[in-house]
Image 1 (cartoon, one colour):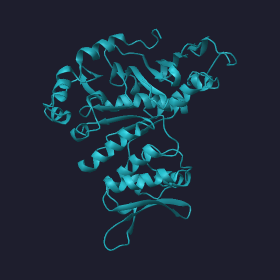
Image 2: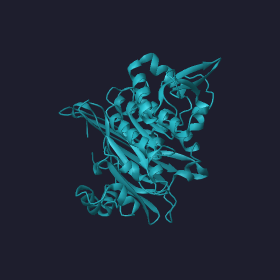
Image 3: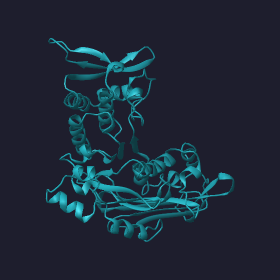
Image 4: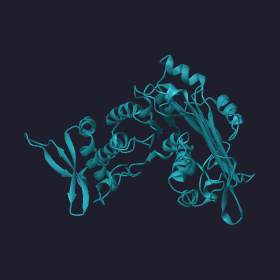
Length: 398
């Protein structure tokens, strides 16, 4: 799927043996909402994508260490699978398609090796670019690239020097993942470049500063949208404190002049809403934004506006949201084509579009998605989920 703006979009993600994800194939839209109860595996799917970004921005060894090691990432089962892997299909501008996949195998002593990696870029009516690596050695080489790489790194980090593969690296390394922590926005913050909002929002002051400096229109939009989410707020401003940074809010209380409040005095919902706005409008536009449970501590009436913002945000970045909130699902900006149901069955996670009965109930306006969820009747398409899982092949045909 490619939008009219010519952006790159993920069309399909395949994950095997990653945490609770035994075999899942998920087709993504410009805006995708993963919905399921706690413990169903929504965050595990998001983390599989984050693992890819972390591995490209650093090393696989560091990405594994941050998650407790390979034993904490590899799915636990009676068969004790030794390998886990991810495959991502992309639609690029002008009809170009890309297909990137890798597999990580555990070895003795809790170590690992990238057993196989492949990337294929096919231009519309043009020549294809391709490479493949097995156990650190290129089996299909790329001109100008040395024949061996380190076992804790993905070859794409090196091959990205080649023009054909650069867009794939740029997209996957610019995926951003957010679980906004209001307490981190309240804290006095260390100086930061402010290009990219951190996962917890802990550099929000610097991001706000750079947004206002580089794109005043985006800054004013954030202030305006925040005033819709939190009535009475006129603006939010960067404020230096010696060698530190913080955020201040101007809010109507009484009279004509707004009062100034420190972030310390603002509610969790206000700070979380600001974090989501900054994630969408930050100076360095992400390729993909993943926001986990945006509904937390946000009033349902305000959540309606935030979902609309995320819906609009899909024209800047591809958007993936995880939620277990009926209020998010009932937002008019969300249609059944945006929803992917997540269920934990038989010791593993399944992800799919809604089942036929759920879709028909929604389209015939018998029930809303939120009502079906409250009643425990929001079902995934079991047959499709199992069929796609059987077709999973990390290194299958292009």
